Amino acid sequence: GENVEQHPSTLSVQEGDSAVIKCTYSDSASNYFPWYKQELGKRPQLIIDIRSNVGEKKDQRIAVTLNKTAKHFSLHITETQPEDSAVYFCAASIGDYKLSFGAGTTVTVRA
Amino acid sequence: DAGVIQSPRHEVTEMGQEVTLRCKPISGHNSLFWYRQTMMRGLELLIYFNNNVPIDDSGMPEDRFSAKMPNASFSTLKIQPSEPRDSAVYFCASSPQGGTRGNTIYFGEGSWLTVV
Image (cartoon, rainbow over all chains, first blue to last red; front, side, top):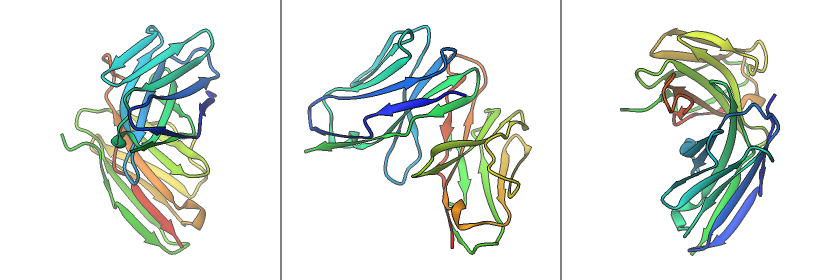
């Protein structure tokens, strides 16, 4: 099955700085790569996703890049704010439904 | 839209008791998922239903776990008998089929289960 590795496991940044989280996947057939944000005690919520026919996607302060050749994808958060503090999960999907999640990155934005 | 609705939100039960978790997916979504989240194992897919039919239950840990989806608006996950190692957050999620966002999965608020 698909194996998704996520790094780093924890990330502390100064407010206003950028944060980058990287994920690698094992199955070259994976074609859908969502990112979820989970605040403490809350549900995971989709923040951005990218499909294998696209190399980069941006939505305000967040962006995701995909390198199919190297089988890795990254989440970039610019101008971080305290409300960006959360656990972020990457995931990869083959076909219609089965998402394999990374282990998560705990992001702390220091004021 | 009310989103995916789960109940109970919190449950504390004694080892050996039966636990039933309930889920109402988003109206119009025909894919439903049960996930389990623990610190040790992260987010794991337990079972996937499509059009009320179980398609993939390979993640169900053992025979103590069972899931049903009697209609498009209701699903249950049952643990009988429960054990302390079942303590986790159980998320139900749903997804629309087809379209440009056909794979997007929307999670419920979760059911926090503690087995003592």
